[in-house]
Image (cartoon, rainbow, N blue to C red; front, side, top):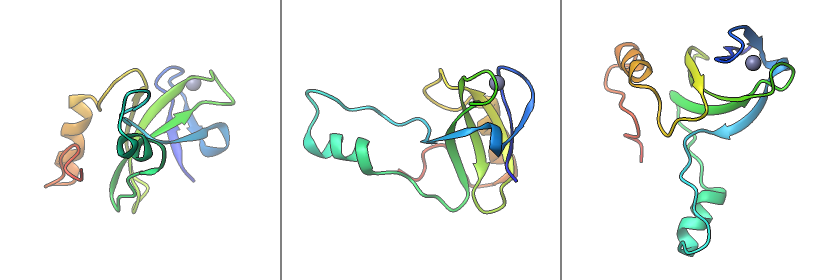
Length: 109
Ligand SMILES: [Zn+2]
């Protein structure tokens, strides 16, 4: 079972208390963007085997959105942080790099 710490409440939530929101840190494209950019924003998602950043909502708690970093193969959770960020906190990226040598933020794009 997936257990994530809500960065707002500070409690450990199991997945029945949470609602998934898909990939985190998407770049939004709207009016004025090209068709390829808009199509990519709507449909193209990363599906990594390893470190992944996701959006979650504490639906049966405070109701707030947050981000989580976890390994999709081992289900290891590296950390959670508020959703009002454009990229993962440096401290979290450092933690992930120590546990997964060779990994770097957005090296897959
Ligand atoms: Zn919460």
